[in-house]
Length: 109
Image (cartoon, rainbow, N blue to C red):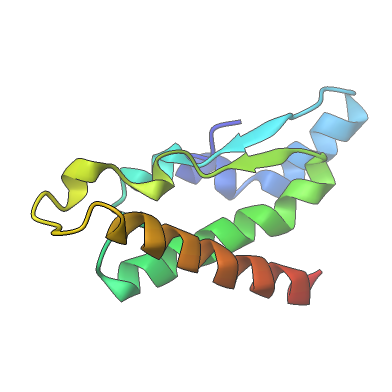
């Protein structure tokens, strides 16, 4: 399921309808958030923090659907920061965010 803004607000209702009608949701696709400027690879800590927060909200809802969450374009693309001196810096930012959000998710569960 592509988590576009209108869908996000209806996750409780969609979860109920999915269970009631035996229509499984196998994954959450998060790419729509990328088009709102959210991504994990950016050098802007505020954007990374906001992106990680949204990803955590998805992770909290996913068990009710028994589905996986694909980070999709939330990782960003190389062209986001074309002047980045080290090609692995963006990957390091992504991993740092995922580690932090994974730890936060474990505390919430």
